[in-house]
Image (cartoon, rainbow, N blue to C red; front, side, top):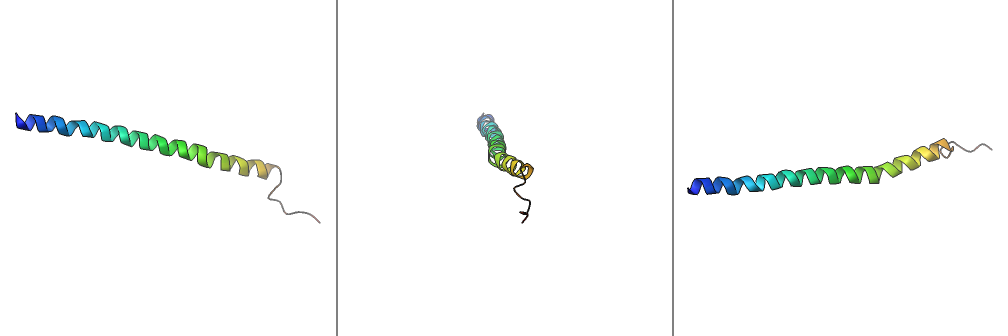
Length: 57
């Protein structure tokens, strides 16, 4: 009976670890989209407006 109780106790943290891993991955995805996404958008916008072209004298 002691072995069965230990198996049940060990199984519960594994589920929590999997859920924690999923939240970490989704947090990384959200930070990437909202952190890098606007920067890329601004660069594309400035490029289309000719910001990176050298000025003509």
